[in-house]
Image (cartoon, rainbow, N blue to C red; front, side, top):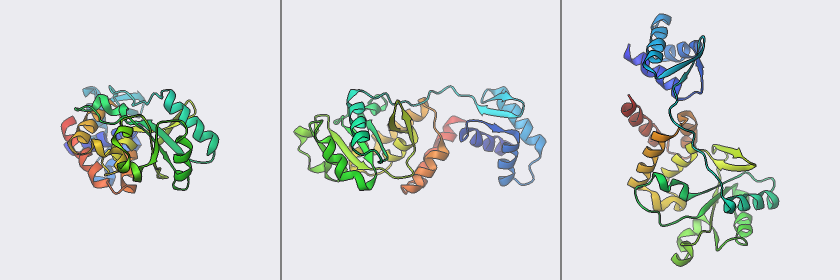
Length: 243
């Protein structure tokens, strides 16, 4: 059954590895009378087709020809992260620069600022702290009032970090995961307003074509941001184009 193969692709997409029992349980939640032999046949078929790889007996994973999205911090980001660690040691944060998305875009960006996200209670303090080490530092809600001449310089936009936001730590610095960046591009936030609409969808499509992506992680975060339907629509289109 073609639908069984589709369900197995979904579980492979959303998990680093999965077992035969995982596949059986997932499929039977949707097709209660599916036989074990049918699921096993589809696992063998997708493995022979090259879509899955068998790690060991009964353990499978999606064949991965894509690379992990990785933010490489420059000195500016490292300096800002270090300062927040020192001044606000108990605050959850992440930092990145919007220019990381330029390679995936169609048009040249008009901005190259850093984005620092912190918990709501630390917004004022973080903006004030970072104002001392750059040309400017403003909270996202005040970004539109920033003079254009000043905005052209690399400053810092400080915005609220949601508790459920997917992050990763590397070399002692917290960065957003790709799933967070993609969902944020779907939101009408001032900090990313210059890459909304068609440009945002171009960037998202290019990111998904090149990098690994955890749809379960993205869906959970999208639900928190009120964009679950949008991420589900992107997933549906992605699966159709990927088959």
